Length: 417
Ligand SMILES: Cc1ncc(COP(=O)(O)O)c(C=O)c1O
Image 1 (cartoon, helix red, strand yellow):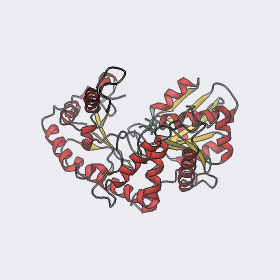
Image 2: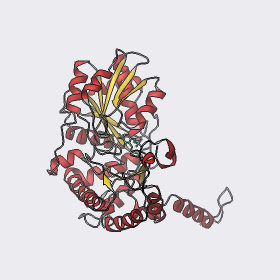
Image 3: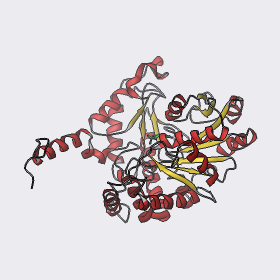
Image 4: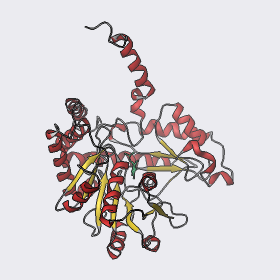
């Protein structure tokens, strides 16, 4: 065994440093992680396959860790084609086409670049409900497009008015983006209506299913008793759908998918972003193999089971939070995304107390001054009672909100985007 490596570091010091950095990333506390991304490979005592799938996905990732998809990645490209044809088919495409990207942001970027290529113009605008993810604003800045974020009907942050979307379209608009599984409301935009608008105006319609993409189809197949409005390629006018493997796909990051309605659109994506349609050139094959392992081992029946488990955890949290005096759960979520807020209590000290107790979750400044965003996954099995008890205890001693704090996000930048 080597005593010292060329840098001068010893094996012992290296492993010690690695452990310190691992603790700083809080991998050791992931059992209290309600955040939407991160190491949430499926692992739940309540699911029949327990940790086995997680181990095999890690093994697949490791075996492909050295690879790239460019010259030597034949096996990974085959895995990618399998994932795209399986999931693209489930999303209602008869000619599934697409690719894997590094995440929901890149998938949105590739979709809008494809729309740009279709429109054959530079500049222009993109219309979307203002519940759209901030990556839409980011990509507009990057690609010299104007974001037209259409405000929600007053008092209903999770709702979208299709008439207002249509009214916002300008002659230079190249695309509309709608969301299936909004962050942080968990709502699904009225995509059937928006699809009809896109067709009327001959516009590209992209559906951001980063969060909802890998759960909504399985909830529908499993007959989960929520009414899910049509949102995928079965809606005429939908050109592309992004869906994140590293969210509800349960795969190790970074991994997302972008699906096109038909292969002609993939050709346009490749024209503007050769050779794959992706922003990145060299793509590591580890994430593709990790995601492929999840698909190959769970398949559709496994994901249906995961979706069912995930939603029962969400329902447990919703019921518990609603029973805590002073708290409200934002209505309208169709997926495992729960926004807890309060019109009576200042949740900022509550957030601090929960974080000090080791709970990891996202915080949002709207509704103000701070709201708690939870995205339970199967590995959160058994944690809801402890979380709810800590939440109730912190809320019981939290100060009341004064009127002006209850609105506006301006003063609370450290509590959200
Ligand atoms: C709806 C939606 N779109 C896009 C993204 C961006 O995904 P990523 O962070 O993987 O780039 C997210 C992330 O939470 C999201 O919720």
